[in-house]
Every structure is written in structure tokens, then in C-alpha cells.
Image 1 (tube, helix red, strand yellow):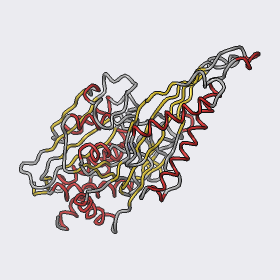
Image 2 (cartoon, protein in one colour):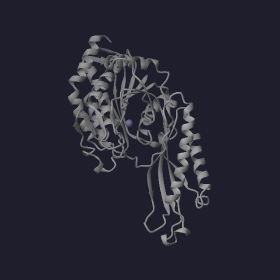
Image 3 (cartoon, rainbow, N blue to C red):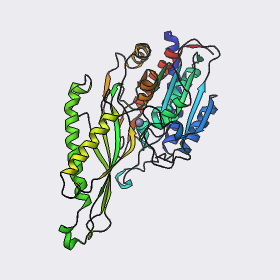
Image 4 (cartoon, rainbow, N blue to C red):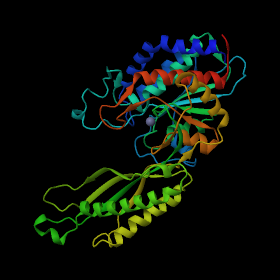
Length: 425
Ligand SMILES: [Zn+2]
């Protein structure tokens, strides 16, 4: 690409930035929590059709995914779950093909009274847009859409196939991304615009979700000693799992990327439910947990260690030793992923990055996961993850910084042009 083309593309991002912000706001305003992503997928289908993409919008069939690497069990009603892919086909192919992927599912808001402004009524204050999903990752998905628009607005057409993919379930199982691969979508590289604060994800953790189902022996509290409290028993198991977390963090010191971080393995008891009455010793307690593993660690072996840890802790407990808890796999069963064998894609990205930010992009060692793993691990498709800056993801008052979004959109547009190639429209 010559400097004139670069300038025209970058200018086109600026020219459309107000429209990009407006579309981002509309997209965030749809409360697309798990199971409610439909309207977001409708909007994405419309945006793609308006732009001339050939749109594939289908119902996900879990039966077709179960045997695939990285599948995680889905527990919610999935009868209306959809994936949406818009395909751009060039008149004649010269460059390399690309998957651009974003997830439109967002995590629950938590207590609304902890938000300064309602999470699904996005507002802009001091150069930041606030709302659930503003950062993770609706602004990135819309940014990638406008990045491709900017190439066309600059009077150019990409010369390779592009699949623009909007998926669900990124925050719980990953089966949305998996469904696009099962459907047959492939490319020479994948780019996922998660918010990475202007860094390139070099290595990311895998994640395992599980549920402890603890049973107690209910009695009236006046004779509590003759019963068994399922809630306090659950705390006994949580303490044992915290020790497993510490052990895995020791092991993480052997990883060439993660050794640079303190405690890259995070264990989180994220949901706890139990008991029926304040004056009854609780008969049950369910705890939903998340723990990370590192790239190269086997999910099956990690599951066996979790199982052994819970079993050992139960043996060590007066009531649980004879009434062991159940353990269920309740979502993610994901491996970690390290970006490698990706010199071509990273080379193209380096040019785009340099033109916008100057210098060389920094690596990010990421203690959360992204959908990149499916492309990289299952099909050897180099899978880049790069995006804007923001904060409070999964917290309250989540936001994206708009100037970082503008820069990211420019870099993404130049990367697409560089990787796919362009010709005069
Ligand atoms: Zn995300």
C-alpha cells in the first residue's frame, strides 16, 4: 500500500467516526445477555446486508458441535441461539482471506444501583462511552465493521474474501465461534477486536467452569450440632480449591510468558446459592466456579486434578466424607492459546500499527480468554487479538475510550487493506 492509500483510508475512518459512534451506541443499547442475543444478531444482519455482504444467519445445533475440540457444555435454553456471518467476495482474488470476529453477548449488569447511568442506555462523558458491552466488546465489533467501510469509502476494494462473524456465548462456552468453524468458515488469518488496550494478545489462559453441589443434613437450628451445614461445607471445599489455585500458580512459573505475571491463575467462586430458611441448617449449597489453565495444559488433566482436590477435601470433612459433593462441568472447557507461526499476519499488522501508533506493538499476556483459541488450535489459523482501551469490563460503569477506538479502527482498516490487498474500486 502506498502512502496515498494509507492516508485516504485513515481519513475515511475520521469522516465516518460520528456515524460509527452512533452505531456503537445503538448496538450497546440492546441488552444482549446470555440467551437474549437475538436482537443484536438481527441488527448485525441488517448492518451487513446494507453493506452488501452475503449474509448467513443460522440456528446453532449443539449436536453438531459436541465432539469438536474446545466444546463446553451449554446449560441454558439454546433453541433460538444464532450465529451471523457476512461474507465479502472480491471480483478477483489477489490477497489473503480474513475472518473478522466479534461476540455480541455481554455479561450480567450486577446491581443496577451500582451504575452511575443505566447500563443499556449508553452515554458519552469526557471522551468515554459508558454501558455494558461498551468495552467488551461491542465497540470493537462495530469498529471492525467501519474499518472495512473505510477501505471502500477510500475508493478501494479488498482483493480477498472476508468473513465478518458475529457470535454469541463467548462469555460462557465459546460454542458461537465453534459453530462458525463447524459451518465451514475458514480464512488465512483471523482478527478479533477484543479490548486489549492497544496491545497484541501473545498468550492467553484457558478456562474451566464447574459447579459444586453440596448436600447437608437439615435440622432445626436449636439442635444444629446434630445436622450438617451445606453452606459451611461449601466453604471448606472453596478453601481447598484456593490451595489448588496456589499450586497451579507455582506451576505457571515454568511458562515462558506467564512467569512474568503474579498469580496468572485465578480461581473464582462466582455464584453461590444455598439454604432455604434462616432457622434451618441448610440442606444444600451450589457453587459455580471458574479457574484458569495455561497454554499447553490439558483440560482433561486439569479436570482430574479439580476432581481429586474436591474428593480429598471431602474425605477430610466430618459430613462430606460420607456424603461427597457432586461436581458438574458447567460451561467453558477451554485450552489456553499462544499466538505463534503467524509471522505473515503479524508482519501485515506491524505495518498498520506503525502507521497509526508509531513504533512496535507490545505483547499482552492475557489472564482471560478470547475466541482466538478455536481458530488457532482447531484449524491452525493464526488468530490475532487487538483492540481499544477502556475499563470496568464485567464490572459497573464499563466504558471504552473513544480516541483509542478511533486509533484502533484506523489500525484495523490498514491491517485489512494490507492483508487482503486492495484495488481501485
Ligand atoms: Zn470479550
